[in-house]
Image (cartoon, rainbow, N blue to C red; front, side, top):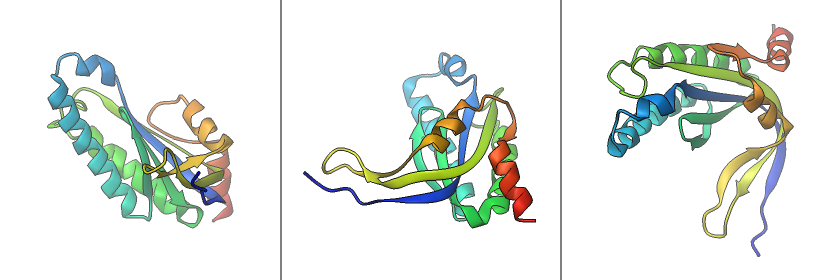
Length: 154
C-alpha cells in the first residue's frame, strides 16, 4: 500500500460554479458541453494562477481552487474580476444567459496527494471545504471567516 504524504495548512478556498448549468446543457450536444466546460475550466485556472491559486478539481460545472492565505486580498480581487469576465463570455454556450457564482472561504485543511494507486492527485479535505460548499448565496460571496481574515490584513 502506498503511503500518502499530507500536511495541514490554512488556505483561502474558493468555488466558481455556473447557475442553471443543467438546464442550458439540455439544448447542447455532449461534445459542445465538453468543449465549453474545458474553456470555462481554462479561464478559471488562468485567473487563479495569476495570484498564486491552484485549481484543485473540476466537478461538473464547478471549480474548486485554493490560494495561499497571504494572498487573500489579491485572491478576492482576482475572483471578482474572473466572475465579471466569465459572465461577459457570451460566446461560451454554457455561460450564455447564465451567471457564474463565486464563494470564498478560508480555514484549516489537510492537503496532499490522495486517490487510487497510480492516480493520486492533489486534494484538500476538511470542515472548511465542507463549509465552502454549504454557502448558497449568489454573486461573489465572502464568508464571515474570510471577512475576518481580510479585516486582519488591513
